[in-house]
Length: 119
Image 1 (cartoon, helix red, strand yellow):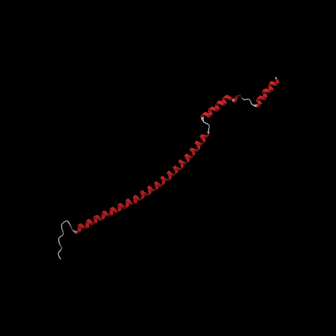
Image 2 (cartoon, rainbow, N blue to C red):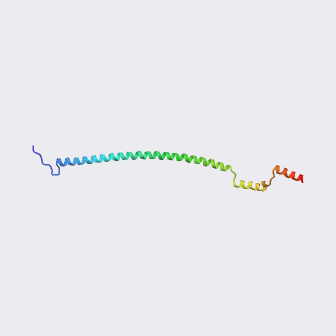
Image 3 (cartoon, rainbow, N blue to C red):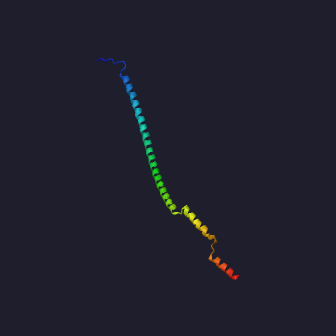
């Protein structure tokens, strides 16, 4: 049997080199995909941890905000129970009118009476 001459651009040695080259490229791509997969898994884990941490911090902030609002409500209720400016001014008028600094104590009155009797 006589071998047929193959076309000049196609021989088994070129085909073998070409297949080996493709195989090397595929292996490189598989290796790079493995690296990307590992990196992506690591970044996904980090992102999930960050999201959990942020969620925890957000819940804590919400609790603190709720506590602050409750405290503000208590303060507002207490402030509503205190005297207003008008009430304080009215009390000041009465205190000025009565002038308690000029009130005498019982002991003072007794001393004044004793002094008057002795004279």
